[in-house]
Image 1 (cartoon, rainbow, N blue to C red):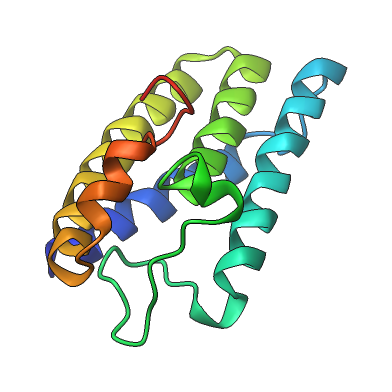
Image 2: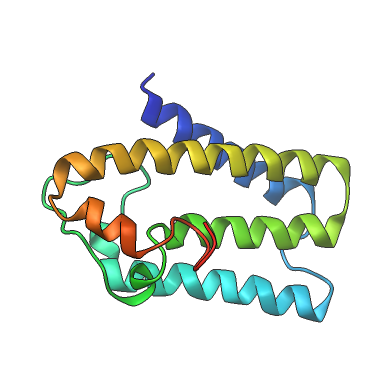
Length: 143
């Protein structure tokens, strides 16, 4: 199994465990609104990238382009951010040890995955290093 496949397997295993371990919609209205923001970010990122070109694997597609518009103008990995927003909401809503552990695993996995992906993107796109200087990885203005 490749590093890429392991990272995707961990990501989807954590998402599956969230799905089977409790409700997927927050009970608190503010958390529910935040969850919707996370989902909207994912839809926006997928729409800008083009749903046909989306890949769950960190390797850039051979026919891919460097996208710097939409949410990608502010953060380099909006789909990772959206996953983390929804997971954070579910963790806060449930407040149990399993959700906290899943969230920590997911955060570590997503950071490792984005670092791996960025090494590959730097190799593929001449302008990626400059793009990295203008944007944050996951959280605008912070990280």
